[in-house]
Image 1 (cartoon, rainbow, N blue to C red):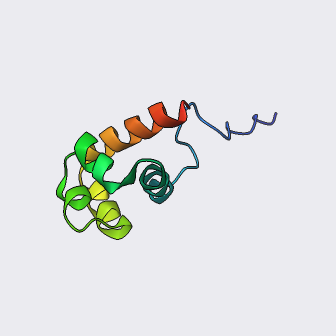
Image 2 (image 1 turned 90 degrees about the vertical axis):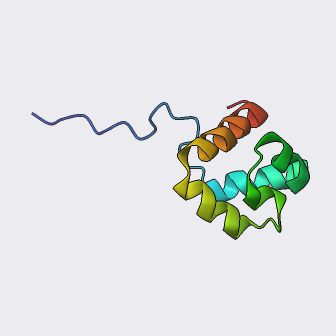
Image 3 (image 1 turned 45 degrees about the vertical axis):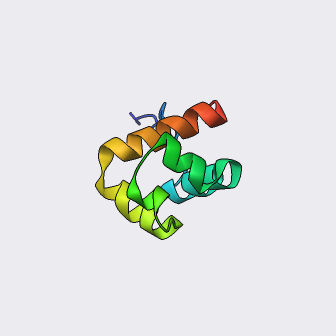
Length: 77
């Protein structure tokens, strides 16, 4: 007997979307100023960059959840 292959895409709306893509798309659409207003973290407010944002969001689950939630609402995934 053979087993069916594993499910390729779980029910995760962010499956296959990198954090870098999320940040770049939000910056392109809303800009750093709006990002700093919606998620008031230093890496969005003072000398913002994709690199500093990635570093912070990977270490800070609550901030990452807020950014990912905003992205899901924005993209209506």
